[in-house]
Length: 581
Image 1: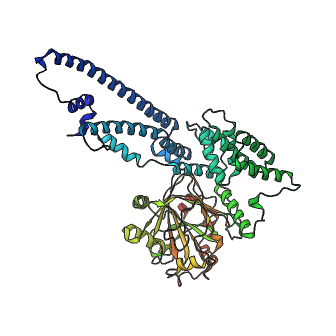
Image 2 (image 1 turned 90 degrees about the vertical axis):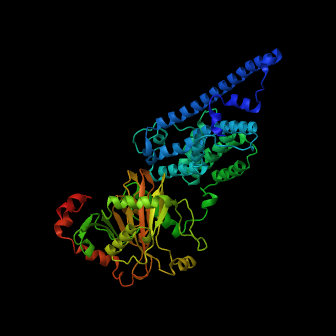
Image 3 (image 1 turned 45 degrees about the horizontal axis):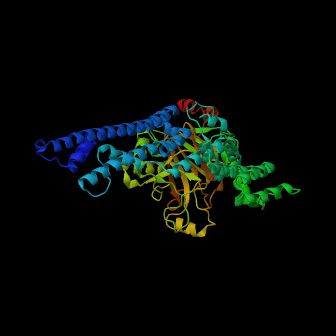
């Protein structure tokens, strides 16, 4: 028997008849006729009650679904456009964890009741059946719902974007990014707490102070006393870390009135009062030791990284040889492959040597690489300890990646070989092509592509067969509406993503030492979707190819310039220059 028949309006009646077979010869006695009359009255009442309950249940489900629709429409973005806006992404994840979860729970409750009713009536094993295609479909989607980790990751992305791009908190509360269009969304105390907590964990204490203060000042009756205590604790700690010592003390005292047994608050209150009573401002216990040179260097690099991400291209921390802040362009004919279709090349820096190959890939090649990579994407990792085969997940690199070997598709082999020929390095020992896709606030903080020699164990494991990463080619597979630039903090260089173009730089000197001026980063994606491809060339096989230093290479390239072209190639007016060549 097909169980789906029980979803028509007579399900309950059919069950009654199945469980109580009708006896014949009722007409032979009025006693049986009277019982039949009673049965009809009772049956009518039962079915009527059942229908009303179903109507109430459907009405409740309709209300839940209408609530979802209302929140979807308020965002103001349709379809995939939501995936390009960080606030829309956060609220999309939140809807699945709250509104859609409520819909799913209601459906699950109804399905379980009906399935168990059928199983008991028919004497079948006590288990949940998928009674129709709808339940099976919903169960499939339910298995793909985001979880709390996704909400936390979305909040981390928002706090990172606020820090790096100095986003105005009030704009965010109004659903705006950098003064852009207003999204019809509203932050409640839970959203402020979630982003404040993410900011605190990211050590953005000014941000966490501001977000937690909103929660503390909120009159929302849905905030529990325990939640208010938690917000007060983070608010006081944030105030202390931005040198609002007296306020931290006052807030902690308020917290202890709400929860006199809060051990952490008692401990911190002693620290705060000691700090306030000292004649000279002591640093917190985490910052007692002066920064060493490496820490100072890292802070300089990180500050320069953020400034470059914001578009302040004059920021740099190391000695570099640039081209007088002026673009230098030429057309590359040197490889036979380029004889009839030369590449437009833009030199951004001589030390480290950084160039851009414009329109390296066609749109069809870009689409193909993304199509091949999409089903293979996994959370990005960084090279970790040698005993960890696949590396380690980190918070300073947020994206998903996939690897494409030359054998996976003829186009991958063709592109890899073409790039090797253009830059003059063999692709035989190059790594597979890595495709990366960045999510909300997706980024990769300042890092070096080569493994530093101080880590002997990791270096040996990593370079024993084909050597270290001598050079990098980064191909942009999409344009990005805002953010997502590649920056070189020590060189003061910023590269905007431009679909089909590629950045190339050397990671190592000719003597085999790493070039620390090549430290670079992927700025967080503010608005839009970023896809990129990395191709890393290794040392082995390049012995007779990497024969010039970066300065010599750049000098040789500059000889190709003619004075007229060099004079007009400024202000990033590439289109005009290339037309005149």
